[in-house]
Length: 222
Image 1 (tube, rainbow, N blue to C red):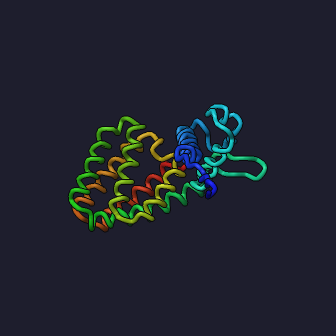
Image 2 (image 1 turned 90 degrees about the vertical axis):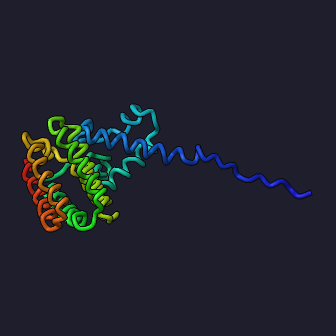
């Protein structure tokens, strides 16, 4: 009689749990950082957070590695993890890259986007018009507009880079939209940009997007 061979059992739920857990933890930490519950420059107390989340330190450390790759967390030898603090030069460099990448995307969208795609952007712009006095909604819709424009430009690598840069930009204590009156100025810039896109004026769309970020940098500077 042939011996019975016992194959290792496969429990999909168990196999996926560690990955799902650290991703969930990373997202929770990410939102705490964006909401300033964990301030830029502050030390991340792993023991305290593990107890607060009801988890071991292993998934927390894996989550911190994810955020370190995104630039939201800085790992210091023998000192632990800190929320990344943006220097004036860091802010300038991030805005410079965003201006280059998103102005190029705006020109591409003006040249080649379908009319239905521009209608999607128009709908997001109309939401901005309604939400200008509601800061949190305005922030979210503003980001949705920019990310939709990037998606329509058809370059996934550019979209991925900008996604990471926009995460880091939220670390700036002097975020441009925090400045009094900046949402209204930003909205005016969006109006001009939207009109250029609908005119299919690639040169103007690119120039206006670049100016949009230059103005944003000025407002974001301390």
